[in-house]
Image 1 (cartoon, rainbow, N blue to C red):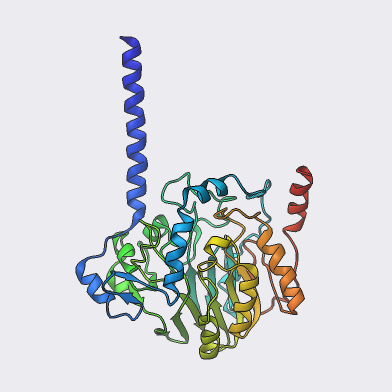
Image 2 (cartoon, rainbow, N blue to C red):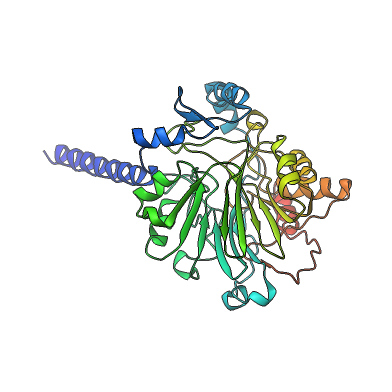
Length: 380
C-alpha cells in the first residue's frame, strides 16, 4: 500500500511538472492570427494569401532545406558533433555606465548586450533591439545562456522605441515584452509580430507594424524596415506566419544598419544603394551550418554582405551567448577577423556590455582568444 501511494505521489508530481512546463511554453508561444489579420497581411507583397504565409524571394530553396533539417539521420549526427560549443569560463564584460550611455554628447552610444540584443542612444532617443535577457527557448532549460545577462530588465533606462527583427525566441522574449508593457515604449516590428505583442500586453496605440521598405519618421530619426532572407514561427518551423526584417536607423549625423537574421542575398546591395553608406553595420555572424546557409550567413557571407552594404565598420553579432549551432563558440570571431584582415576591411568586435560612441577608436582587441586557447589546451 505504501509503495502504491509512493507511485501515485510520484505520478502526480510528474504530471504537475509537465503541466507547469506546458503552461510556460504556451505563455511564450505568442498570439494567434485572426482571419482579419490574414486579410491585412495579404496587402503585403511578401504574403502568399493562398498558402497563408510570408515568403522570401528565395523561398523554394528555403523550403527544400526543411527536409534536410528535420531528417532524423541529420539530427542524430548533429547532436553527436560539436566541440567547445560553450566557453568553460565566463566571457569578459564591460560594466555598463548608464549615465554615460544617456549622455547625448557622445552619441550614438551603442551597447552590445550579447547575441543580437542592443541598447542604442541616438538623436536623444533610446532604442532597444531584439532584447533577450534569459534563455532562447520556450521552456526555461532550452537554449541556455553562456552567462547571466549583463543588464537586468529592471535596470533598463526608459526606452523610447523597441525594434524586433522577427519572432524567433532568441530575438523576441515574452517576459521582456511583458515587462516593457508597463512603460511607454513604442514598438516597431514587421507585419504580424504585433499579434504576439498584443497577446503580451502591448496596446495597439504603442505598436507600429511595417512591411519591407516602409519608413517611420521619428522627429530627427528615420527607421526603415528593409528585407532579410530568413523565416519565422514560434509554434512551427518555417510557419512564416509573421514577417522578418532588418533595420536602417538614421539620424542627421549617423547611419546604422542592423541585419537581424539573414542568409546572403542581393537585398544587401539594394539596401546599400538606397540607404548607404553606413557608418556601422551590425551583421549576423554566428549559429551557422551548411544545411541552413540560405537563412544564416557564414562568415564569408557576412564579408560579402558588408561589402554590398557600402559600410565603414563591421560589427559581428549573433554569437557569444547561445549555442544554437554545432560550431565552437569562438569560431565566428576567429573566422571573421581573419577574413576581414585578408579583405582589408575595418572590423570591431566589442566586449559584452562595451559602449561604442563617437569617440571609439575601433582598435581591434582579440578578447576571446585567451579563453579560447585555455579551453583548447585542456583538450589537446
